Length: 188
Image (cartoon, rainbow, N blue to C red; front, side, top):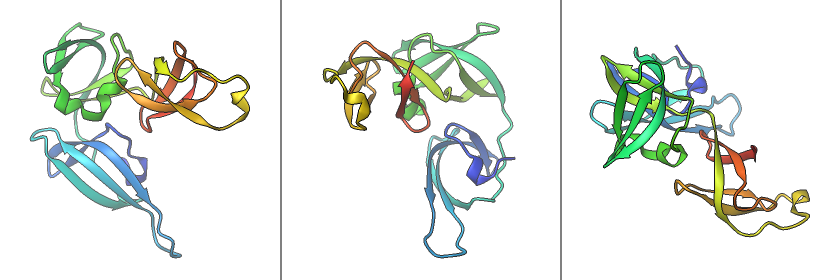
């Protein structure tokens, strides 16, 4: 049973006997002495699709939803659904683009390390790997000697994702991106 301070994006928590996926986590540290850190969590109800906002203290214990996990790989886009294949028994699971939401820009064809969360044979959602490797498709030209500075520039990827990368990178390079924060980590 995780504490509020241990939650990660994509984790499935049970609230009132209904599974909810963690979408965003906002940590607020109050300035007064003795005050505890507040975690504001936005959930997505996996049954109805509604959003739910809750606030917790760091030590509040939450109940993880009872669901099976299966390793899957992204296969293809079928209209408004993304199809994932179980890497062990080759069964396929389909999720709508609305259900995937902010995870879509990190999903590329053949991406490994995705975990599908299943309940009674139905897919509730997915958990992305912590780090994905993607190729920069479009960015400003690299600047020689820019590695000593901390300046960044925008870079666009094939999935439509746009993040800030260091100035010394150029189009065609493969970089590692943290899926929880959406930030550049390093070259691959």
